[in-house]
Amino acid sequence: MFNNFLNKYDIGVKNLNAQTLNAHDKKELGVNLRKTLQQTTMLPPLPETARKLLLLRNKPDANIEELVVLVEEDPILAAFVMKYARMAAFGYSGRITSVHHAISLVLGYTTTLNVTMGIAASGCLKMPNYGPLGRVRIWSDALECAQLCRELCRHMKNKQDVNPGFAYLGGLLHDFGFMLFAHFCPQEFADLNEMVSADLKQDIRTIEMQNFGITHDIIGSYLLKAWDLPEEIAIIAAEHHFPDYNGEHAAYVKLVATANRLLQKKGIFDNCEYVGTSALLADLGISESKAEEALQQVYTCQTELKELALGLIG
Picture (tube, rainbow, N blue to C red):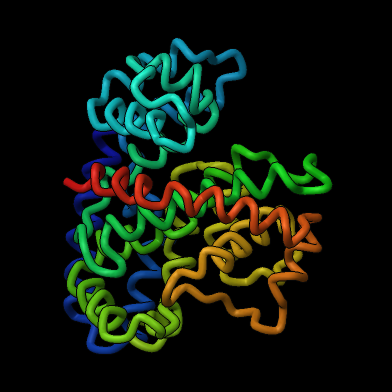
């Protein structure tokens, strides 16, 4: 059954490439891509390791030992987890000598599961390594955003409003749409990368809509839904540029949007200039002093997070 799905996906990708090559304007490209995104058989299937991690995530009685086995089966994941746990910010350094130590003593079960699932899932998506939207930049930003979301959660007045694990995973995966766009439309993505490189102060989402008729938030939400990830994560991907969103799971959207604003990434803006960051923090029940404290904690490990991202390029 899974092989049949893969065969349908391969055929779908060939058809999509033919469509996009014949797309003569942004409207046609956007329409072709939207049609593709609506057909789950034409989206990349969740890689096997990521699928196993997702099953483990949904298993009520799962334990660290099971997670250790899955991580150790993948050299890239094992190396990442070990390096992550040895970051200076955690204070363990050379004392981490095994994946089990890294998970049980430093990262914890939930963070390890979420970050390895994200890494494993992205393995099926082909994209350039460098540039303002290359794999290194996307993963560096994702790791910073995820870490800041987790730190901000600790300072929320009503901590029961969010699950820190979902907040971390949402911060990690909210820009996955860039990866799928690169995978499906490599030439168009290369053009986008060049456009952004020419002026890092431009709003990336505006460039996407003006030139391709579709944006990474729309693309990413389709993919995360197709992979059966938690509803909260798909909503974060779809709405993180709209922090005035008041639907279900709005707290997660505001959290990721606030983290992106605090990190002030070039070209990453949201569509709610009339909603101040102070107002978002107030909605989340986080004082500005605590938000600054959380931000500084992430800044202390920026270099190491970029090194982790560099370790993920193929």
